[in-house]
Length: 393
Image 1 (cartoon, one colour):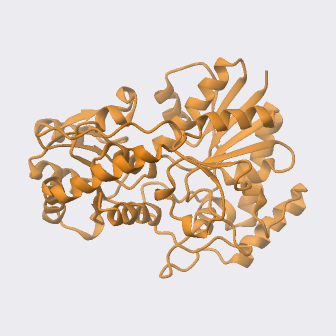
Image 2 (cartoon, helix red, strand yellow):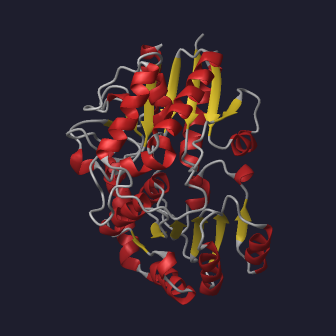
Image 3 (cartoon, one colour):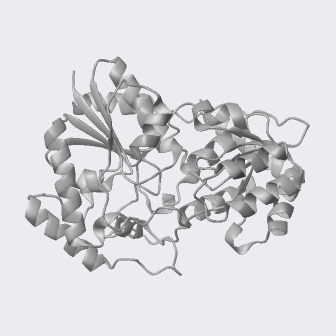
């Protein structure tokens, strides 16, 4: 029996949470001692409804900058800046907190999903496995992360990022090479990108890596004749009200899952015949998405992947550079379109949704994409992850 800590430091997307919970339950069933460290332990406890393992809060920097914002970043270094790497003292406080947590639990292995600070704190003292998507596990080329937006200057300069990490290395005796980025894991060794490569926004910069859907992808499911939608949106999205009014005005029938939705907004949707599901009802997105002819979401990579596999047209309303780039990939595949709601009126969003629900060409492309993915038969990474866990223990 081993003591294993699974960590998600900053991302609130449900795919990251359910990925870790599935791993935690599998490892728990094999008699390992499991701890989940999550950025929102109350939400985690609410969603798991289990006492199988303790759920602890993730340390946060003093100036947390993710809450309720549409985030524009040009590369992974900007994310690091927002979660504590911009200030050496903040970063040291975080490393100290993680080290204290590790000293308390004494894990044999940590599994990091969107947890770069925890990975840095554990480097060279605790075996580490890295999971995530293409954006959270970027390639490290010539001592830096590639920029994804030429029009978005770095939030933190490379020299300052290096200086802050070197200061932490000195104080905490962390021996890792900044020139190779090895503290973030090694591609092809202890790092898994848990989705299809078509949705990896860093793909042109990579040489090799382990990737694939976390679980087997479902087969294509042709939409019902009746026009219906499924929307997975965030209650913290600043322009959510515009989208909800547009949904109502479109007269389309559908269902929504919106974590953090206010009671007033929920009643508004119910009044107009739109079904509202709560997170406790959520067993899998596939259940809600199958048979719909339109999926509306913010551009999460795993929602996009599932819609690809089911052959469902996607309407993407992005919240960040990362989700905008996922939306562009979906658009290039002719499986949907992207619309920045913060630059649009209610009538613009309504027209956008109606146009997509009516466009048979996008439906044909989405079905074709689903067939292509099914033929490629991507091997899921879950069994490989379990195998590597035992190799690391």
